Image (cartoon, rainbow, N blue to C red):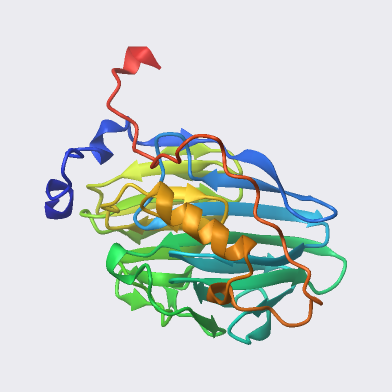
Length: 312
Ligand code: MN
């Protein structure tokens, strides 16, 4: 709990949630000529992060092509985790790779990177894309890309995509203590948790999590203070967790920062084709333009203040 105690003005933020709490995703169109719809699971109003995880989109399964032209990122890591179909990733570092189910693409944006993601062929596409916020001291680090094709498995049931679950640690580079694991449930599965971390479970199929029936696509936020979570049923889930993130983040479009000014500068750099974001080969200069900024200052996303149960 020392990490929570160190947050000025944010004492007990995690426990201010009536945990466990089920969050519904919202459907949003992803950019591109033929917009693909995704289910945005995180951030949620009042729940901007789970550990350093600050964004979670689930897509599919549906018969759709992913066509995401070059676009920039700052201040985060992107985690691409396909469940069906193949995705072609190209970035401004010169990476040009396919990622398949069971494999992880991890791109660290740091001070700035750009990338494109296209599905390889028609057919079923299903997967998750998540972002991990970088801690302030790493937010402007040099960009990097890594792919992992042989991730370790905890207890024969949970692929440890990022971070540590029990005594199993993913080889992927992380910058804060966290966990991300793809869990197969057939009967009952108990996963060890760090009580000083907060956790949430995305039910990719209907499952019972911590005794609560969680419909497909919903996120069950568990808060801190748990040594394990039990998943029951038949299906699949994604476990997210980590040390509660200390900073209020300003998130806009594809940028994660800590101030309005930081985001404005990143947008201007992309709009001005600044070398900060490099170029992604193979698209003939095509790229996703930055949307207009809102006419107001961008505000940090904050955790929900404590509310009495009757106010809900
Ligand atoms: Mn992206």
